[in-house]
Image 1 (cartoon, helix red, strand yellow):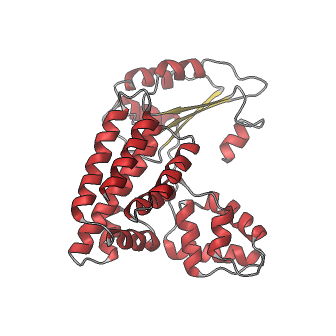
Image 2: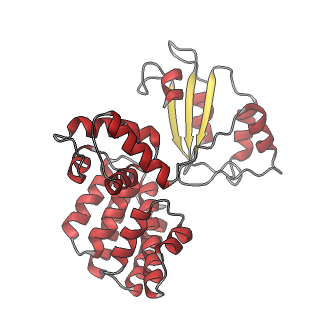
Length: 301
């Protein structure tokens, strides 16, 4: 966010900010953006999200673009869904290391994050329990950059000194993954009206359909893992290790939801998500395919 504010002081709606998604990325569009002079500013900012530089067939042309990048262009590759896995054998990796800086933003562990949240509420004259602080971390993704603003907003909204779960739900904007978790839980609980409302909430986030599908599929795979753990009497720490889950609240929620369904239904849900993800590649109306998926899952549960 600081980089955006520095390079695009007039906001992101102007001519000097371009954002591209990795799936279906057009190198021609990137080249055009890189060769367009900034308007009333010193720099042009180009963000490319979740693009696997080292596996994509367009890497050769991208290498040529990066090798001859104008001084006024700043390109940022952001990885939030896929991992950044550099291949030292490829020349594009040498080009990246020559001109770029690789920065990893590590999420704080749960105990430190909860203490940090409680301390910031205290600074605002409010109290919050460890459980509700954990919930706040969960629904915001646990990133301090977004948590800071949500803490200020919640503290200003709360009518009493003690922050409640209702205060958090009233003003905090949940991240995509949190809505996908709630959608999964609504399906298993047979609350189909809520499930469709949550799907519409996902659509309102204006994320790429494939990104929404990835999040829903991931939650169904995690639910399957939770059901396997339940059937084998495995503890929540096993589930957390298996799925790379950071928050105990998240693992407890998955295990609770898994107790309401069956292993067969979880497997069918994962397969249905995989089929829908495949269909999105050739669908002219991806939202309809996702609505059909939720309808199928609702009937199955």
